[in-house]
Length: 117
Image (tube, rainbow, N blue to C red; front, top):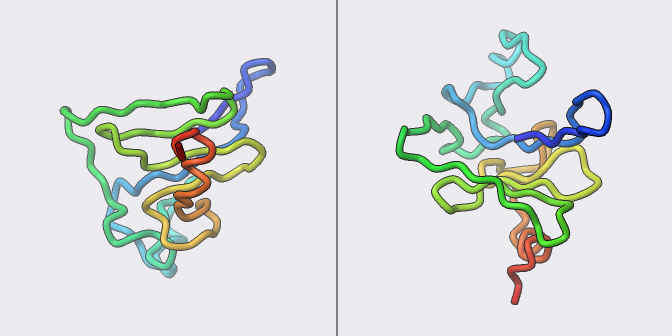
């Protein structure tokens, strides 16, 4: 998931890693990926970080009430969000913060999405 700045030529302002589309590689295996966005490795990704979307899965972006943050919902369940001012967002599939982003922070999510009551 990535946020773009449409006021200028489109460029990524922030992103949030959500899941791997392949089995989670080890640190030793990561060198084989020549992309700018390699899959998250085992020491950062949850054991269930591999996901293969089904045709019946529903993906939705939901903006915060102030319009400065966004969350990705898969089948109405939040999986990742990007708060304002940080280049890497939060993901439920990260077990620790690192190069792929931040591990999930439920209190921050509740505050940003104004769901804390």
